[in-house]
Image (cartoon, rainbow, N blue to C red; front, side):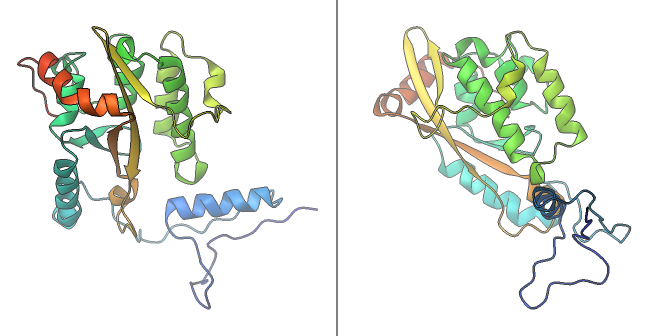
Length: 248
């Protein structure tokens, strides 16, 4: 026996406390829950005018969100903060992000829009300065899968994952989550000239987004993972950044 639920079907609307999935993320999540319950086929009603528009970040409709992001980026100085889309393309940064990254590589050699995952995985990028690169790379790949909308890997994400898998040293099993629970997070550890800096990140998203762009925005803020990094961060950047400056 099989059954095929209509997750957003017909004239069904939100009423009496029943939540009807509308956004792509909600529909994908509902379909995944149906699959776990034993559904063999899921019917999705489409063809209506889009309820949520796809506005560029600099569009007038996005002005309030853009200003809020700029404020959050400024307030996170002197530590790096980065705004990305769902495919890890860098859209905005504070001054601290390129200042730190320029201590290791020349960002001017990387065309915009820069992709943070490629910067981390490419041997010509930040990878050589990441002390725990295998653990970090595995954690990042796991995040790509966890953060995919509704656990659905779209075509652009598939292409991104395929590109990352071509870098030397990347193992297929890294797509599975690590079971190491010795720490609450995987720190990102940079090493240069005997200085070791440990960071972890926290991610902010837009609450109740009404555009596709707003739904897919991620603001990632890097924090020092220990007292030594907090004390050394600014001194390290001042000593190593030189004259290079390349904002996002």
